[in-house]
Length: 387
Ligand SMILES: [Fe+2]
Ligand SMILES: [Fe+2]
Image 1 (spheres, rainbow, N blue to C red):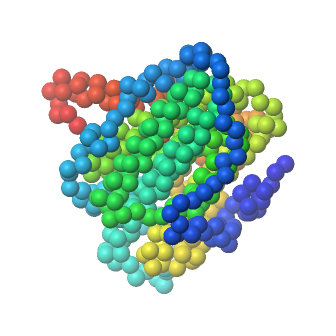
Image 2: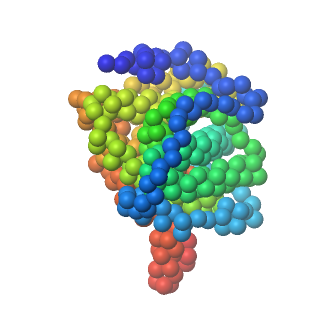
Image 3: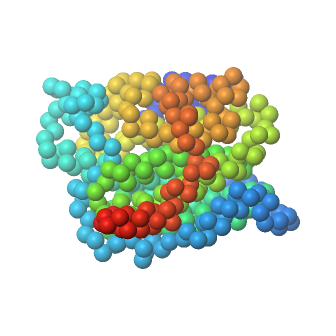
């Protein structure tokens, strides 16, 4: 059986030195090259609708395009303090902050000014990583157009490429015109994106991107949308979510067929890949770049986060970020093959409790812009104000 060391480069998931040793690529580089190791496949089977669920998704996507320049209220001034789209972290409730603010602690000297600055930096960092992740989705999905053997999937993936271009565009515009610029790519997220794009197997692109990265993004955008009171960001997130729900469904619907035919050994490789992606995504929550910018000793702060986070991830908001990933992995048969391998790993990570939540294979319609418009109409007909 493959060890943690072989999968994630360290035996102990919480190994401080190993986590810190992963540093950003050259921050001044403008272009980053990765080998994608794959064959581009042509198919001569043009039978449209051979995979009806993918065909339906493609037809939906054609009617759901929006324009990032003209459909969002960019004229609004953004009050940066209203953005507040990160999960609230009450310093008095959060064990990491309790330890950090204790007498002689790392953040003991912080006053209101530092805390306000931290909230803004942390917000900017989070959105910057989503912007980089959107570019990852753009590149990965363009690869899927080339590598997937089915015509219905190539058609659908082409619409997702357009969606992702729009997502990169709107996040970049928001950060650069409303939030004083963006943070560089986090090293852990960068490593995950490189791993996904380097794998030669077409289904691994889907598993890494559509199931893991986009599954996490869909949950995160949901919270950010719920928490923020900044109207431009709220609408931007709602529009992006309407697309993301389709993207995750694309992953579930495509892989469901393929994973049904794989051997135990092949499935184990997929289970390990999903676990590896989950660990990388957790590592990036440590947001070391924010501590650096705030002038806090990064090593000491990460150590504190790992000690108080422990093996079990006890932050309920961080756990909830896995609320789409776990039921989707279950639907794909990834949790229980090979003696419940991934179930055990997700148990150790404190996220298995979401296994019976709704998977994303069918419920993308509830997030569509069509249903948003219908809700608004019903609300207006009731005499309520349109939100
Ligand atoms: Fe996206
Ligand atoms: Fe997406």
